[in-house]
Length: 274
Image 1: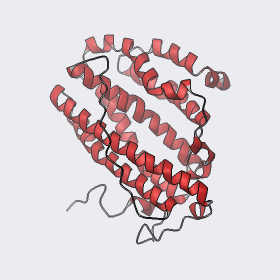
Image 2: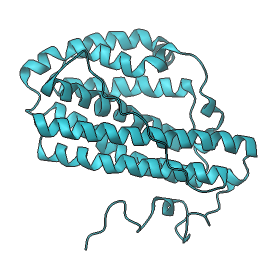
Image 3: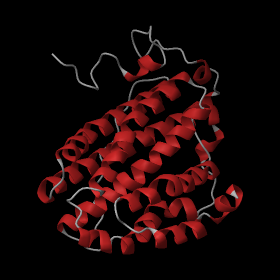
Image 4: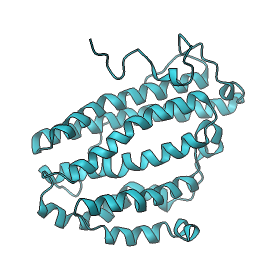
């Protein structure tokens, strides 16, 4: 019998401690050496992430229904539906990390409302396409870059294992958005009109990052895989230039107006790159 990708053999934390029999027995020297006050703050960060990941699961559930109603390729259906389970697993990982930092039992995220964006009252296949761009081409693609930067500086074995496990799923979640965008289910008429949406979609999703200079509290903990706002902005601009804009062009969608917005929004990062 084939085992589930998220079955018990092996659990995600085996990446950090292959010989461990239970999560509780894992020793992480970086976490253990962290002062109690900082551990409490890191626990809160991971606990909040658990709730966010669970909300993303609901997003993929809604997106899966919309694609079933309005069309997608078999591969897109398979990955989007699996992403619902992936994100629940990410919530579990995050809640377990929070418990490790607190030194107590796992706390599952509390219920939260499921918000479905209206995209200016768009309907049908248009809404499904805009939802796919937002969640996969923008959010999940950016998440991959942020996770890679976080893993690169993390020293905690458990944090690296948690972030690496999440990244392995996020790569697929990002790719499925670009696959759908290049598929026949996005019509030539849609491709012609999408440039007028792209700037608004990117601004809506990156607004907090580009319009606020308040430091991220988590940026104080680089060895735990937490990056600063400045680092996140650098990753975001690099992801836009190297992955997103070329991706739109490969799908036959002109991102020129959004490129101009990005040059202004990330002027500091652009100047540093010159």
